[in-house]
Image 1 (cartoon, helix red, strand yellow):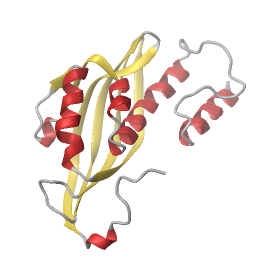
Image 2 (cartoon, one colour):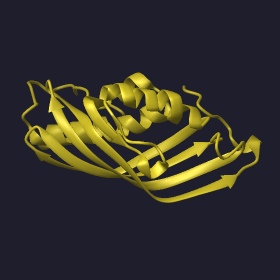
Image 3 (cartoon, helix red, strand yellow):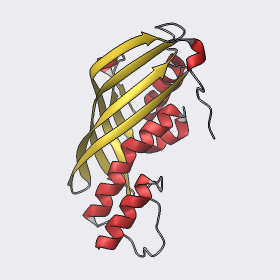
Image 4 (cartoon, one colour):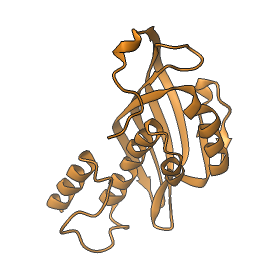
Length: 183
């Protein structure tokens, strides 16, 4: 068990995203440690998908009837994947030229096929349309989650973002070395 736990941790840290690791066998759906690791992967996958403006990846993370609460940022709560998709494609993705997000200290508590959790986040957005060119918008705070296991897969059923601190600064345009480029 210890070796599997460490292998899973390494895979997640190195971007394995919870995929099977060489030497793993069998269905691990009932294993609480495996469920905890699968759930902890969801917020990290969310951050990468937001920064990559990958709407399909974001949609794959949410349950069909998920609640997405960004009221702390001035957005109305949205319910359901179609409404979440619309929020991202019409507002969130268009707000910033690019962004870089970091998720840490993911905490998970599992209760059968449901779970709750939270994390700390740092989000840095560049050239926010509301803030103008050559601006960097820095936000740190916490996300709070509810998760549900559906058809053998964990999904986000509720997500709430709560900023703790934010700041905006101007920067020299040549300081931004790349924005939204993937390798």
